[in-house]
Image (cartoon, rainbow, N blue to C red; front, top):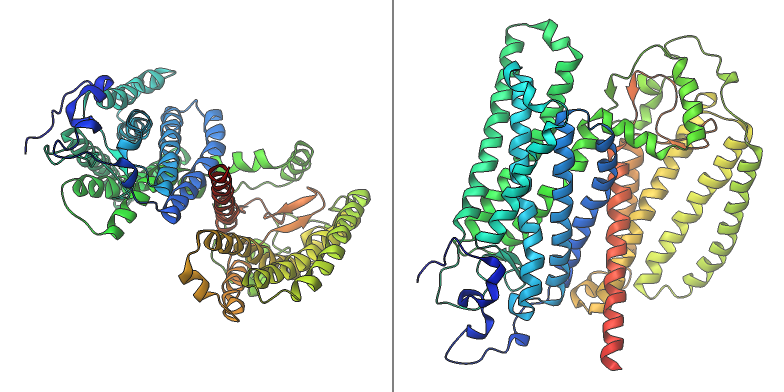
Length: 560
């Protein structure tokens, strides 16, 4: 079979016989409505994964923009833009997988929409290499090349990845979604007369991640070599450490890029099992969805920017006053896996180990009206919830009501913590160090209920989703009393979060729940598990309900 032309005019793609669906098979007509495989679960998971990347990326985007004076952050901002475009294209792909879309169902729409994530992907690969080059030049301190990144010059350099993404989409074969293969394939899946391949995609997926990885390996070896030389003065230099951390976070992103890109290129030429294609398509989404989490994990400046965005202005004033009383600066992020049963033996939560003598009785701000409103809100939630629980108990034969009862118990217990206990804390002006053991115990209990509640909401959404799509094997798994056993999973999840991850406390100075107990400024208090939970579970649940609503609307239109 002849290989399709590698240099072509994609603006006229529908006039080219390699992509003309009416010429798919000269021997007989093809009914395209019978082609395609609907994969609702896979499509829904793709959409959820994309949204789980887009939402935190948009938050990080604003913070990165504020730090754009640094050349690397200018490039990271551009990388974020093209990554978000790729995720948006894959969101459409997820929806297309759900209803079994094929190229020939809507040729022009699919060609144009698929061009967006492909162009963004090429731009992303090129940008990652340019960031790696920037980190290499800065970390190795090649002064003759540093002037290339002064002032606004990095913005002009971003014209290279922009052109690198657009030109191949206009002039080379591109990959398009195929629901039968649940994958992006260069082959549109309608003719055996040609061999569909893209040499450019193979080159891009092999060379760019490899070159970026090679630069980071050289940088890592350079760091170890300097440590062996006992260059302690350089190792203690704050600018050098900042550059090293920035290189580390960029290196993690490049490693994810390389592993998936090479696999995606290889599968264009060979048959592969379904599981591998599932994994590699999720890997492509992961390439563009992981950077915001890497930034939040490694980049202290971005984490601080996130805290400033989430704390109200008045609270920032109180926080700045508290900070002015502390002499030491933050040094490190607290351990994310810890034994909370021994919290009072841990230096991060020991109120007696502050940097200077503190009279804790002078700390805290009384907010009686706010505290009273919290308690009233709790009553307005607990009383009707208890009535509903009594009614749902009589309907517990349905597995969904069993889950709703479990959710209701968690929610009621959580309301006692966040409304009544927190209301009393705000009204009386309590802070963590007034009664450390009481605060830690109540907040640990609240963590169990909150994390269990989040995961149970997702399980209920998934149960409704399975019921609507009539997925029978799921009914067997949760039939009868088995539903109660499944509720062990969210309980374990809540206990894990409460016992082994950092706890958030009620603080009357900030009148919010905060991970920082306000003891010392030598540590940075954050909880990566909590942040991940608050993004993934609500997003996944909303996606499932959105899919169900869309399905009901389609069925209603078909009936009418």
